[in-house]
Length: 505
Image (cartoon, rainbow, N blue to C red; front, top):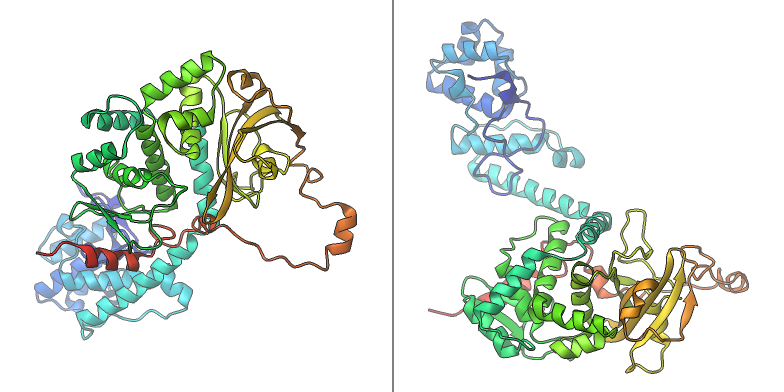
């Protein structure tokens, strides 16, 4: 039975199937007024009836029928049945959600575009879609509309949206103690498939993983500068740079590319998707390099000996310090019953990455986002930059408003400058760690501005009106601003590279 709730007004920009780049089309159980009107007009013309003749047949004014056919007025279900009877068809046939023809689909899409926010924002007057307008003209109008709409949506992906997505994802990670059993299972399955029997995961084993998944590795000197690796899914190739950064593990770009394949990642639809994919990719990469069973066994023994150390974990599995620290946060709470926090902080004091489930109070903005804020100068993540000895593990106790925390930190270099990578725990859990005997101790009163955010009054009085600094923003923070499907990546450069390197014949 046809019901009235299947009708809806065409007030939103909803497209027709087959029109590329148009907004989402109605669900199969809905018909908007534009499509209904076009189906009525198409049926009337097929029956050889004039507008006046149909109006007379249903006892309505021609202007009323015209408004229905143009999608400006919805007929009641009783009138729709009368119209169907006059046209020799059924209400169900008129209520079909598809356009009656390709031309009608174009006209409907253009009408929808005119009623949407883009035309309104541009102050454009709606125009009548005449029969004399060619299909090419309508397609050009739609293409221009869709590109403007895309630019508007891209502009809407503001830093605020990015920060909301980041805060939401971090809350989810906290709720599950940063432990993802499904990703652990994926890593174990791949390691078993290539015959890993223990010990560090070698570069050859990583290459075997690529081969097992149907990919070949190709090292090139012209990899697009905005990428760490590039996957040609069509030809089963992973392109990597011939020049490896001394601060990066050469296995990680390969595993990150394979992780996206293993996890079935599709093109991200929004910045939240992009962040989630990045988290999953980095997690799976670390879970392969530091397999769960082996890492938990090693860390449990270290805990029993009261000598957990990020440096020793790094060396045991032959990974970077940052990878070891990340992996520790995956396993610390879920498998070792140790609450923990992690920070990666630029030398400017800006937080790049952060995670906590131990009640430490990170600085945050009004949206709850931590990344991009400035960490207290008294925290280990900042004081480590003043250490003269960069080789000896650095640790410190910090008294805060939410308790005393012990933290171990190390400096790592990247092209954007120096970063500190820090792992910390509440005071009652420091007994499990090497470095607990450190004499270093500080007090942080943040977020009280008198702690370190407000300059001394005598300096402020002297320099407040006589200084104009130019900020040096890390490029990794600029990449956090959504500017495309894959933030920070030049897609034209990517496509040109793939075209140049694709196998011929």
